[in-house]
Length: 210
Image (cartoon, rainbow, N blue to C red; front, side, top):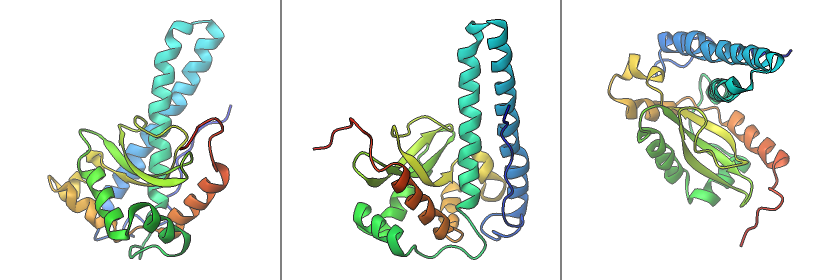
């Protein structure tokens, strides 16, 4: 049976300093993300065991555990690739055009993303999502790891608002963490994700638009 695996960061733990400290990346990737991978694989094993035994009453809870941990794994995997040493600035090309079309300007988009992240209640994420019904980019808050996504939407850029992502460096100043991320965004990766989302999800059959 195939299993989930922790991806490499693709850069050194200190590559994003001073915006994201080495100690945070070491813990965030090596402990928190790794735990989601481990727990997702545990849930897979327990689901297989429950099916084999015919213990279907336990399956809904195991499926919830699998969904939570796989979503955490996926969002963190996107987050690492969304950043790079020497990143930041503004996007260009098709990504910039889509942002300007859907948000009016890059500055408006930035403010909207930061607002989504900084007002997450409890644990969650802010995400830039390709919404295939209308064919546009939207921002959304993600509760925990998986709740509140537009059905069929594909996240192309994510901001981690869980406390473990920022507290060691920014304490109670989490808005400063979200501001700092704009110095490390990998716009090439985000643009490539948008291109892929458009190709694989050009629309949702049966979903009407006015």
